[in-house]
Length: 411
Image (tube, rainbow, N blue to C red; front, top):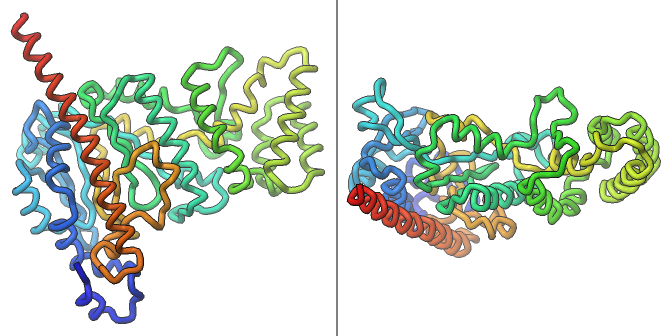
């Protein structure tokens, strides 16, 4: 699948270098040869059940940011025609309605929608020190690894969900799609309850301390989250250097509500080398001694845990989870700015993912690109990951329909 003709049109570009202007010529080939249309339709079909697939809303973002909503299709052939005709630079998925979206766009009623979660690294800008805004690096990814592990375990162990799809956003975050029937049919308050259950960081930019666990015994889910954070905390201390400068240290000190303890910590840490790891160890030593000596330490019983959570715990865009109207980028969509594929990954493998090994449209289509073989292999693995989730979902849906049928007969 060479793109020698593309290189001739832009001879100055380096081999394997992404050029957004080439998307109109690359996307038709990508959608025809590489986009997993069949398994994509099967996933949406299960996610639409018991409504027809044609009741599911899609949106396309075309060249020059032309935005088309209320699109739908009834089968793979119609999807293929739609993709080839419109060639979207971005493909987003919405809810399932009681009618075809284009027909009842003003009066249609939402019947179901995957329970979705959107975690974006820009929401970590107040704690990450390696990058800001749209920039992302390997050090940033550790935050996503922690978020993925915590959310995945919580959804499975605390809510019993099983059909969970994890997708790289294409640039600076990850998306989670929960397709279990019980999740798809949750109403807005139910979705809000799940989102609130997962939110421990509260407050705006002007609030210094955003985590308050209280003085009672910690909930099992919080202890589980902390055990995951602890696996990566030393690494984050070294890579992010949370406390290495006076400004960063000041942020941490403002999280200490006890003035006496804060004064002790400030005096000790300001006189130390800049290493965040060493400063954290010293803080823990002072904090533990203070708690043993203080007559009333209930208010700061979980202070160390609260600080860890504020720096490392998942930061969700709760409005995406709570609402029905927000459309979310489709798996295997191309991110227009990076050319990266929104690949499906296994949560257990998040820690092994490398951003430069995530397939990009230009390396997949240009067989002379240095990373063509690696990206092709990783693309196949991503499709296989997708298939495994969809096959499991189809099995669960078949069991549910059979049980529903038996219940109807019993009635």
